[in-house]
Image 1 (cartoon, protein in one colour):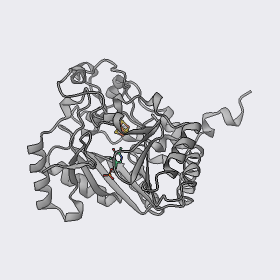
Image 2 (cartoon, helix red, strand yellow; image 1 turned 45 degrees about the vertical axis):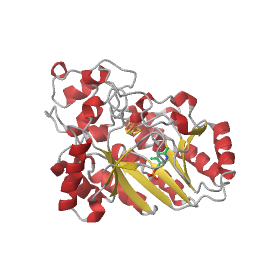
Image 3 (cartoon, rainbow, N blue to C red; image 1 turned 90 degrees about the horizontal axis):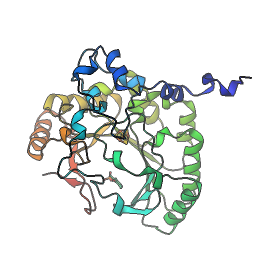
Image 4 (cartoon, rainbow, N blue to C red; image 1 turned 90 degrees about the vertical axis):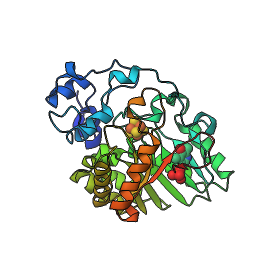
Length: 333
Ligand SMILES: *Cc1c(COP(=O)(O)O)cnc(C)c1O
Ligand code: SF4
């Protein structure tokens, strides 16, 4: 017998959208009226292809250089081994204080809540991360909370991943219930690309969870191109802003996606219109398989100088790079 609970209709809309996600690059390319044979798709390198329908809907049909497509399409360039590109470019391994928990910077601890992401970004520094060893299950969650309780200097917890908003409401609640026993916490930060890649996730159940949290929250979302901010993303961010203290956007400087002054200006303007102020603009983390996205420091400085000339100060992001062993995100100067 098919019960109501086993029909797909019973799933929240965002989970249904994940079920319908694009998992075969050839199929998405055909849908975009592009010829897969001409695009040099790479073999599966272990970091599978994944794109939500709502993100794919913002790609331009017939444009092989579409900046949104370029972020997710595996190409043969990924398979070239490049010197200086490795599997832990930001030194996460050395920052692990407990399974599922990293502390790299004073006052802040980061929880790896899940391996799942709504889309797979080819340049992602976590593509080589061993999530099996780090995922936060029940026992690890309790251990993380008790570690925090012994560290009164840590006043901010960052939920990260993967993407923490891929957890369902019940699992999110389990994490924040455990954190509620940590007396010195002043802020909860959420690092997520979901409002941009899967805006349907910001639904009534999620807002119930968010609205019930005992701490001020800061959302750091992630978009790299102006066209990632469509109306559905703007309404998701508006809902979040009704309950959060701040919504910021971080971007990665990516060759062929946003490495020109017009694209970056548009990104900052579009982010502002949708409700997110710029935070960091990252130089690429040198993870294996991402060399074709790299933009050099001199060009990056030139671009940020252009932004300063064009935009109000609050729309100019901080250009940074992450360096293993440095106790903050290193300003690029
Ligand atoms: C980036 C990062 C943070 C946050 O750094 P901010 O400069 O405060 O945004 C915290 N922990 C880890 C492990 C990070 O990589
Ligand atoms: S962690 Fe963020 S950047 Fe990396 S694949 Fe997931 S959504 Fe993309």
